[in-house]
Amino acid sequence: PAGTLCSTCAKSNVRLTPVTPALVYTMQYILAYEPPALLSFELKDELLPTLAKITNDMIDTHFGIELKSKKFLKNLNIY
Image 1 (tube, helix red, strand yellow):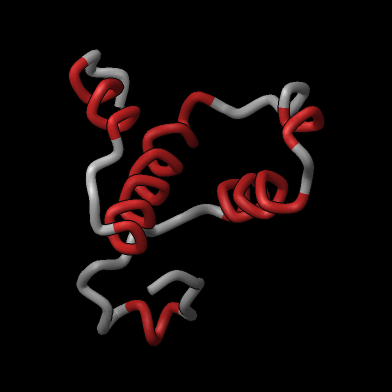
Image 2 (tube, rainbow, N blue to C red):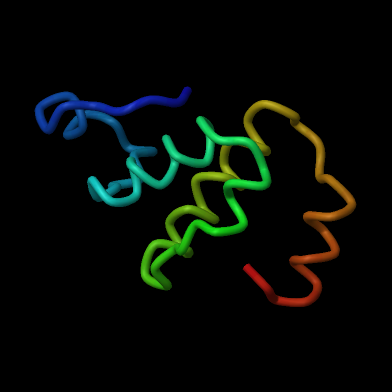
C-alpha cells in the first residue's frame, strides 16, 4: 500500500517509512514532470536513502520480481 498517514494512524502501521515534507514534495515533483525536467531537479543527499527505500519497497510490492537493473545496482552497492 502507498500513501500518507496522519500521526494517529501512523502509530498502528508497522511498515511505515517516515517522510519529511521535503521528501513528499520530491516524490510529487518526480511523478508530475516529464524526464527532461527531472534532469535539472536537485535532490538533497539526506533525502536519497529514504527515497531509495520507498522506491524499492514499491517495486517489490507491485512487481513481485527482482528486476535485473535493481540486482545490478545492488551488486554495485549503490543503494
